[in-house]
Image 1 (cartoon, one colour):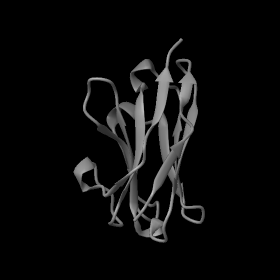
Image 2 (cartoon, one colour):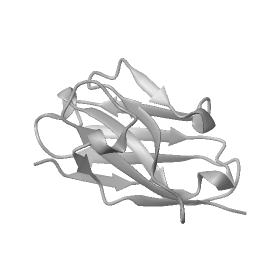
Image 3 (cartoon, one colour):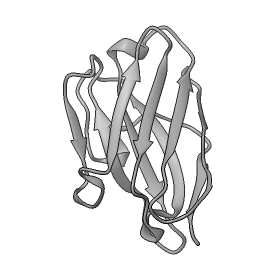
Length: 124
């Protein structure tokens, strides 16, 4: 069983930055693809970014490309999401997810473990 715990959310003004962290339990972190998803009120959960087990392959949804960066520190069992130039439309609950596969996926149904989520609100 893998447990995931996100932190780093909060209220930020448009144009600001936040860094989300997700600490994972268990000994399989370095072989597990990880991802960040988000869900805004009244909308479906969507992929934000994903990263392979070794960190060599990443994917970003179009709306965050060039503003967000996903990374991982396998020695610390920690996943990160650096979010820059935040916009009001980035407001959502952000979830980290883990997959029992080295390669990532943009399909939320293929992820096996989920964190509880952290709220990100972008507003002036």
